[in-house]
Length: 565
Image (tube, rainbow, N blue to C red; front, side, top):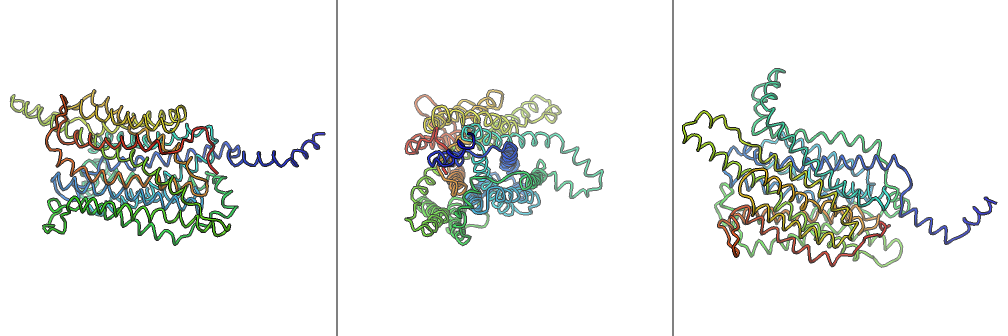
């Protein structure tokens, strides 16, 4: 009887189709494979966050060391250019490695992406010139941008639909835990540099080499430590299974529609962001020896050049996807259906761009702003002791590690915020959650910069709150972006969507110097006085969240829907 029932069910076409559809929406029950994929991806995101945090912590000291200058204007210029180059590299890597993940598989591409950012971050510790740091950070960023999209695609495809919100929260939390580790490592490094110096001398390291390694708070050692994630590539290749959804696409032959020659368009597209960086960074008042008008650009030229650069990048970075759909349509004798995917890619890029611009333009400036407040207070305390005749006490005064503690509390808040944001998005819907995150991020960032004027526990409390709000998007985006694309283009589509926003963030980072010049006087709005400098500039950048509060309502609501095939 059982055999008859079994055969009858096999002959029922409707039931068979329903079971097949379910098998595509829900991955097979492979608990060990899921856990290994999640572990590898979480470690990858953690190290990804750590790699980004390293330069936030040691970048200015590295540039001062390499340029042999204390000129804050010149150091600040180089710092913003290198950060902008990093963001452009991440945007490019999101497309290149996303393409690779859709072509050769999530696991193999993720291995290459982790190896790329690990090795080139470590090589940054051996740089002899500031421009070398910029080049190495750009190449490292290629891997970082790719690892995000590949890890998200892999985890969302191997875990069931009901777990997506929790997985998204873990994704954002892992990257910010990496930031936390960097802050903690920075504190340890500050306290143990003399011990490390003595240790190197005791094992026979030449004095010049030891001094070279620990100069400017040991920035070289911090960057060399970035090679540790390379060990993760062995774990990924040996223990992590490939996504069954991707393997299904490979068997169908759809992965063959990706072509290597299409990546030439990405290379051409890279010239667009390069133009933007040049227009906003090149300044005759900052670059030594550049005294001609060749390096002076008017605002109209810069704005026009930015629009041209974005257009070049947009065409170059989306070209591989368009060609993919054209080849797929030709093989099946159909009309290319790339417009819907392209519109979702652009929408995702705008949503990501708001979040990234808010983070890099405002929140990421907090450690530098707090460090300046702390430095002024420390010097004032020293001067007061000297004026009181306590010169010896002034020399023994210990300067608080304000930058490191700010980074730590931002990271702790970010871990909490990413986990909460994914849960909220699954609870009230994707669109209402994004709107709420924009509103809270804007208000809390204003509170940080406008309600605090000295370093202390209250300021650190607000950095925790701002970290939770501004980073909450990085729990929401891994939940939402994979839901916009089918399996065959998921890594490339979400890689573009998330990382193209980094180009917009790079523009914001490059504006910081100009905004600081413009906002050199405090502004009074009603009875509220907004201090000049970072508080005023960052408060202005936070207005970008208003844009996000509008465009989210043009996005589709995907709550309760299975991951598209």
